[in-house]
Image (cartoon, rainbow, N blue to C red; front, top):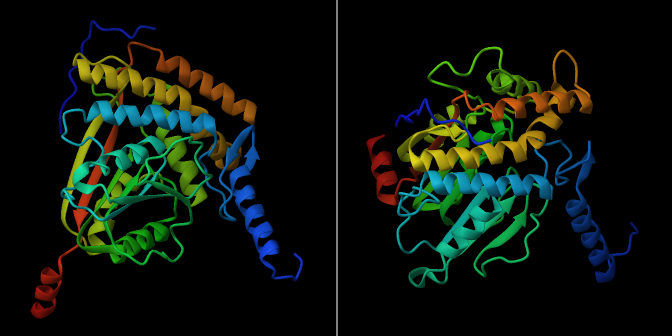
Length: 347
């Protein structure tokens, strides 16, 4: 793990029964329209693909925050030959799928796969929330609104499955099911990759005090999510869960993402500036549903959430707080047919 250098002198610049085709078309159009509309709470739109609730908004405001978050990772991993993923999928991947809240990650992946050497590749991008508001997509990239915990209906296996920033999406048994389905859907020798945040803010130089709202932030929402039955700590469990699903050659990379432009290193300084903008844009979406449904000692009001967020935003502007988040990336391979056969012979 790489240390982020701290510059102490740097400060942030501040129904009918008919079964005719027409009726079927009407029903499906109504379903698509319902999914697109979503459900509304406290002025935010949320997904409408399932009966149970999901904590994250699926509206343009939150998608804009995702875009900034995507830029954070591109700058952080600028030195990589491919900053979009680490799995060594080779030059000839056939089919790829991604579960991601970042629409631009998906679109850029499509552009990567359109290089001449793999012009026929078709990455699938599956969303479990409302359709993202996009006006253009690479011709080899498809958005599908689906529930990934239901039976997968794709007939051809994938070479690469990427899961990105889906913390809090499923209960623990849902994650186990997802990894098992991903294993079954991959070609032997195919790769899975997952990247997730630690929602807690930390500092190594004691500039983040216990009394700061940012210091309390992560634990507040970890507890809210536990009461909702959906852990935000998937970054701590995904490696072992992926291994238990049968994957081999497991790699793990942990990185600090600065919150604010306090580092001395130029790249990390720019990363911190973007992360500051990311947090400012995303705070309400991260907080509103969890606090108004599962806040302590009782669910908060919208006004109480806004007061809390105002305090957090003031601390984000504080140039004396050198905060950061951990981000964890795991990538692993499904065994080849030869490896599986060899293992069977051993037993």
